[in-house]
Amino acid sequence: MPGRDAEALEVRRFWEGLGLPGLIDVHTHFMPERVLRKVWAYFDALGPLTGGVEWPITYRAEERERADLLRDFGVRAFTAMLYPHKPGMARWLNDWAVGFAGRTPGCLHTATLFPEPGVETYVREAVDAGARVFKAHVQVGAYDPADELLDAVWGLLAEAAVPVVVHCGSGPAPGRHTGPGPIGRVLARHPGLRLIVAHLGMPEYEDFLGLAERYPQVRLDTTMAFTDFSEDLMPFPRRALPRLAALGDRVLLGSDFPNIPYPYVHQLHALERLGFGEEWLRAVCHDNAVKLFDLP
Image (cartoon, rainbow, N blue to C red):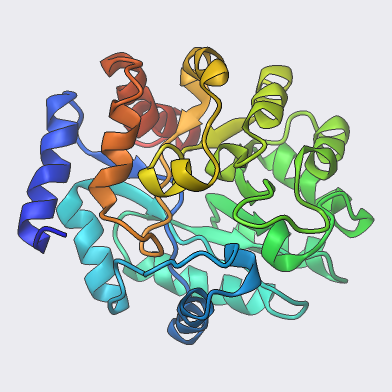
């Protein structure tokens, strides 16, 4: 992998070549250090939710260094995707996220949730505190997004027009409630929910494209899609590329930084080699998120 300065130059060359003022990445992970280190340990141990695939963490560094690196890359805005794996964690994570957003320029204040008593209360508190985006991880949390405990929460987020990034696809390993069915039931009840499907719904790409085609507020993020790593494991079907190109106004750049097994710039080059053109890339890498989050 190139050195930090060389990599930053390569990333900047990408977006400058598109005439953009920088990038907006809707899927980056920041969380309390002891939680993040447990996540890294899980990847190191090839836990079952990674599909048993070797997954080296490219950007294993302290919090400030990781945030500074995104700024060096020219990432104008990014998220702190954090998520609980059990009840009783979400409110504490949300409290941490308030402080992180406050001390970290460029961070879109991120919050999370879990189907548990009191979830509507702490989600409303997070929205009132200025949360710009939520993260829900159906695979790790092992819960049904259509759980009745969450029904009022989805309605609250839809009414507040706060986007929520949901890992609901079955990659890299399926869970009891992953796939298009459970989240599809949520959308049937809350069609105005600003749902961002993480990883383009990998590997059920076509099913999730169908949800985006059916529901105008559904978007997809590119996290890890089309990289050599993902194409070896869960390739995107070539026949579906025209559908993805046609949804260019509702696709958003995501990376999974820092938990990726390759350099950040590879995600950008993977999108570029699709051949959809500069207008599509400008929308995906910047302009769509500017509109969604009302950014300057």
